[in-house]
Amino acid sequence: MSTLDVSATGAAAEAVATHVPTLVADRVASRLFAQDHTLWGEAAEDEASKRLSWTGLPRSSRPLVGEVAALRSELEETGYDRVVLCGMGGSSLAPEVICATAGVPIVVLDSSDPDVVRGALTNLDRTVVVVSSKSGSTVETDSQRRAFERAFRDAGLDPTSRMVVVTDPGSPLDEQARGAGFRVVNADPAVGGRYSALTAFGLVPSGLAGADIEALLDDAEAVADLLAADDEANPALRLGAAMAGTDPLRDKLVLVDAGTENVGFPAWAEQLIAESTGKEGTGILPVVAIGSEPAHLYADGTVVRLVATDADDDAGARGDSVVTVAGALGAQLLLWEAATAVAGRLLGINPFDQPDVESAKAAARELLDAGIGAGDEPAFTDGAVEVRALGGEWLTGTATLDTALDDLLARLDPEHGYVAVMAYLDREADADLENVARDLFERTGRPVTFGWGPRFLHSTGQYHKGGPATGVYVQVTTAPAEDLAVPGRDFTFGQFISAQAAGDAKVLADHGRPVLRLHLTDHNAGLAQVRTLLGRGGA
Image 1 (tube, rainbow, N blue to C red):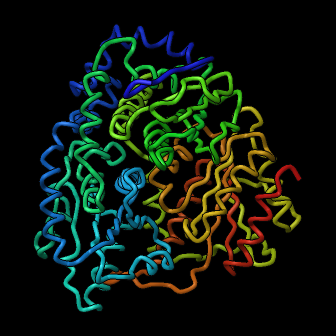
Image 2: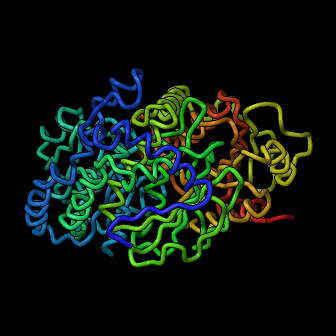
Image 3: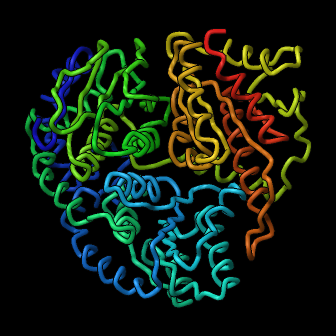
């Protein structure tokens, strides 16, 4: 394969043949890279006019290479060998993939769980913290920042010597951080969070952790002209057409790691695609497959095989709609951003807004103000699990976990439905819970997504509420081992994550989506029950 390659078979190939000639005739690629904000219709013009600078980042981000190198040299006097990134969504997922692919360690803190936050507040004498927030007002990131500032001071360390802030110029965080003496790196304000991999949000934490960010930009720049070309061989046009141009629309995109050197790439692509396309009752649902076999096949799905650059195009291809993608990480970051923008045009939506992410945030804030849990009694308790049912009168009178799940799955559309498992737990300590996605797939024959809360709220959370009303939702929450105060705030981390979970469930229910809420009153005992419940396959 070449440096960047996209091939398609079956329904995906038919979509490419149908739509790419029109996309070429309409000069979509060249207009996109010329930052033409009219490509997505009049309703999207205002937002698009402020969100297209990502197309030029392979060149415009070059000054960051030297800036990060100088910053790293300054920070070396602290003796740091540990980088912690406080960020959400696109601000955290891109650095996670960049560092994993480069083989350098980074701690990504994108949780409000008090036990997870406390676990990150360790080895402070060896730690540099990067606080990333585009708006400068993201509550999760602000709370984490406050916790680290307090922890550094309590340890007798100067926070300003060990913390770096990445934010848009003029944001509240920009002004506050500069006034307090912190190092600040401004990102390009004309780039949205999920398209920000090659901005300061992706490059600063990755570079401080030891990744070669210059090589990353080199790989992206090497394909920029190819992706901007009005040519039927353009990989972005081909991928965008395969994603959103099938007829009828195959709106499930199964992302399979089939040997790609880009470690963890499906999780980054998931948030880009879901948050960009899942709105106005349409969208593409990315499903991150567990394992290397493309076993998740559905009549309404397309399998995307992410392969190594030297792989055989057809090795292991399965299904009647398959796309195979290869390329270096920098090249693929730019490819998928361009392809997602093209998919937005084909779907007739604005790929740069996220209205339902904001609604979940607002609901969480309202619950924090009102007091968590007021009037929120469980329908019943089974062992160490409290059960709540939202989004309609769908729960039967039999008070067991098994029958509650049966009732939820009875609502699943056998042709177009999907199951979303949303776990507000520790994604490292409880990592094996993610395997229940495969078990539920085996049981239902339908796609199953798994999201760690609250990070998925900035990702698939948009699709859950703005996309087609075909999902059923299982939410898992837990009581923390020990709560943790948020310095300078009138709420704790435990209260905050409870509000985030309850707020998300409320918005889903308000949209008529059925939600089964499972709260673990005892973490270990309850988690064992939930694992058994969700993992019983075809039983």
